[in-house]
Amino acid sequence: MTPLDHLDWPFFEARHRSFAAELEAWAFSALKDMPHDGDVDTTCRRLVRALGDAGWLRHAVAGTAHGGAAEAIDTRTICLARETLARHHGLADFAFAMQGLGSGAISLDGTPEQRARWLAPVAAGRAIAAFALSEPQAGSDVAALQCRAREDGNAWVLDGEKTWISNGGIADFYVVFARTGDAERGTGDIGAFVVEAGTPGLEIAERMAVIAPHPLARLRFDGCRVPKAHQLGGASQGFKLAMRTLDIFRTSVAAAALGFGRRALGEALARSRTRPMFGARLADLPIAQAKLADMATTIESAALLTYRAAWQRDQGRRVTREAAMAKLAATEGAQQVIDAAVQLFGGEGVRHGSVVESLYREIRALRIYEGASEVQQLIIGRELLKEAEADAP
Image 1 (cartoon, rainbow, N blue to C red):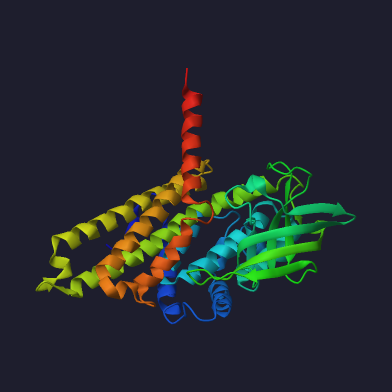
Image 2 (cartoon, rainbow, N blue to C red):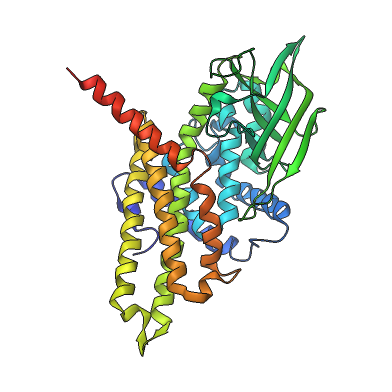
């Protein structure tokens, strides 16, 4: 079993197979000497530039006139990119994904002028994008969002905080979601705004350290004036725009989990074949073989759900339930696979800096961001009940 075996599945076209093979060759060469820890900001900037120079970021934005590879973002391509990059280098996957997520709302609903201004630099790796939705009291519950935007002449003035913002502190611009009305809760009066780094009133309030080194920050807005020309869509369309953006990239989170899981399985297979155990190899023990079998089955099951959801979205179908199933199965499954790999490695598996130890830290956040596993369960249950009620006599 090789990492590219699943490209024979009917979900893919020839262009996807070619893309994956070319990216695999590039990643093997370009990422093998790229640091994983150390100065994360510098490494992330280097990765964005490298991904842009090689042309891979073109697939993360929409519109050929603005640097994109196609007029619309192809979900299967995004997923193949994230699976491949995650298998080679967790921060490379992060850099690619955040370029797409951070600029996704502009790809979906930006004016021609907005797309020309921000998408081309993102695709070229010359600008770093960020998606600013979560708040201290509004993570999974977007309806509790409290960051405010009020009109003032030809500008919007933002006040409030955002937290757990990926690329926070290194981004060149942030797509910020803020409440445009007086309501304390709800999703009907949320707008989306592009706030460029260095705008007066925007402060990086805190750099946030997490178990897998990524650039994250808490943002504070204090009388931050944003030109009306930086507003995306209508003043009350922000929630829908945020959900449409997440719909594209949620399935790709599942693909990243597949990449981490596949790398863990590969490492576990190699370790099992060389680790002496009770006068034989670890691989000769039935208990190890059973564990490897469970790992492979978990990965392949999640991969089927992931690429089914990606294929369905590329056919223009609604994938709310399917994307939630893919993210839930892939992230939870990859956590189990990586934990099993650590167990097969024994003490070496928990040594800081080992591959499986790094994967153990990388996978944990995927079960939380872009909708925690519990939120995915709620989505799946809600969609199932909705269908059942629609079909009821």
